[in-house]
Image 1: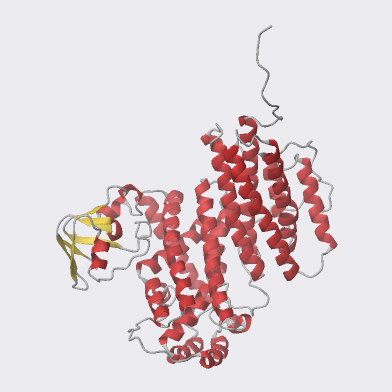
Image 2 (image 1 turned 45 degrees about the horizontal axis):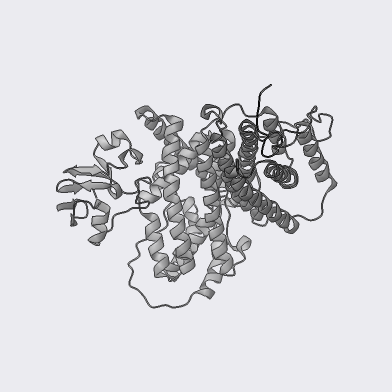
Length: 90
Length: 470
């Protein structure tokens, strides 16, 4: 179980292993902008400020995010898992 | 001499795999070109009922082309050639179909000549082919024939409503296209070939080009914008809008949503015109853009349906603007797509659709909420189309992303300049619409229990950031 902190809103929630950050937020009743829930619409793209967030390896190559965006710390939260406590630019 | 058993059944000519793939490829080319032509004439057509039908038929035609193309590839046809080496006769015939003089002639050429000929050719193929050996084709063609027949029936019924009389000139156009089609051996190419009918009165027209400007249905007054927030200089229009907001933010959202949806037609025109302008893209590009154009036309129809459901005289009460497409029209097709992508991605990333949906639910407006829900799902797909194809067109690297940014910035500036250049045009004044609309809406509103939703929504000025810079 990892703690997800939304830096802009100050909200926090817990993410279990195997659930995406979006699923964890929804379970906690915290709204994060989203649309497709499949990593293709970029609505949930968010910069990771600290910690490790990994895109679902089963379909990481199919996501609508550029390599340079990933390198700059952006992730699609509907298709990504926390691998440590995480702070997000939201 | 050698010894053999007799064949167990007679097989007609032209039914082997090579014959099938060649004929089906020709059918695919016919449907592909028809799809692109329908898309371009969708942009060109102003009559609303006809226009939205052309958008639907564009997408349906794309589905048929895709089914045929898929089957061609199953018939030992080289993948590298399926989108090359198009039959030049079929390309020439479809280029003639596009050269109609007006929408009525275009519809006569497509729905009275090209599509019936395709339907008959599909039937002839089904009659000829072996239902066991070529079963996957037979399955697809049975559905394709039903689809084509439905398109023909629907458009003929619509034309009977929309157009009065049947000018003789139409028969000349139909006759020309029939002669031309005969000259290339018919849709399947099995007929005798001859020289094209160059001496016909309808021959020799210039190549068709998709329009760079659109005109709206003549039942509406000419209008550039549809909501006063598109034009920050229209203070009278904004004042008239504020009266609607004062009734209740929910009411304003219901009105905004319907008018905004109806005016999304420009977002259909942008991808549709790109389908014509760009003729050398991967097949999936056309599939996606046909869907994009049809979806946006569906959204436009959603808005129209809501307003009709309220009993409004829509042409009298609701502006139908053409500023956005007409500002975009002269841009290269990639830049039109870039601006559309910018707008749609921005809406999704801001969560605008979710906010709007929540307010419509709060208003207990089930119809508008359901429309918005599907619109939101569609827009997520569109962003993926824009992301994928702009990368394909501009390059999947940093230089490509920088070019996308440059094209987008330039397009936004062009759009903003268009607004400032036309801000005082009589067609830019929206106050009269919203003054008339206020009286109608104020008569309709009624009370429901307050669900306590805190509504911070305010109409977003179109590309406010750029407008602020001017």
